[in-house]
Image 1 (cartoon, helix red, strand yellow):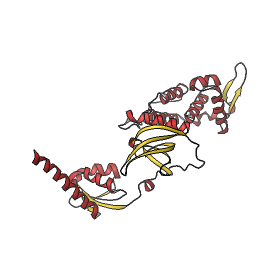
Image 2 (spheres, rainbow, N blue to C red):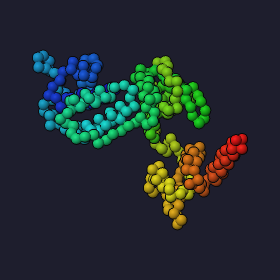
Image 3 (cartoon, rainbow, N blue to C red):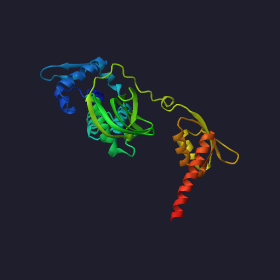
Length: 307
């Protein structure tokens, strides 16, 4: 990615007296023309880079600005490397690992101490996630549509989108793009996508709104749930909603009140708590839980009867 390469070039220039375009081109495995464009971009960003021709020439940061080489502190570099390491955790190639090695090679004296931030974005699905992400990144870079089968609570559909962003949010990966079926921008969860292939080329739209990833937008409040939890589930309430999400009742049970956006999600959560929760409100959720519990009991009773 270009931004990664720019960071790498800047790191080298900050910690080496001088380098050359051929050296940078070989180091980052791109053409000299690409390196020249990168140097121009860094200059436009306000980095005082000078180039000199002939024997002993090369690329360096202007002498008068050597005191500004602390623009990136050791902590800054550690955070950059932590970010690259997190991307490497879901990468299907060695790109990010090689980039980290290049940055560290030019900053060995600058980076001190051991890594203190380790981020793994791969969750349980690294084997299936990495090839999907690589395919999507290629489609974004090449302006190719993506065709895939999508599985959602509303049913299975065949989709084709113009992809624009890979998004990590709510502990999952998504692709954000313009859906040709719905004629609007949508988020698609990678774990629900199957049979992904590149489609035809497309021209990027002139206006691409950034995805609104606020909880209020994606999970709008529908109603309030009120439930009483057994004290043994205190850890779960704190983990998912924070230490101030409940009140301790005189009998030691925990009164929980919170907004929710989706009946199915709430039902699944309550059922996962087994008989250690009692829903008080809303009424239709309490009745639906009773119906589901009766159906489950009947199903297993019938199985026992057949045996």
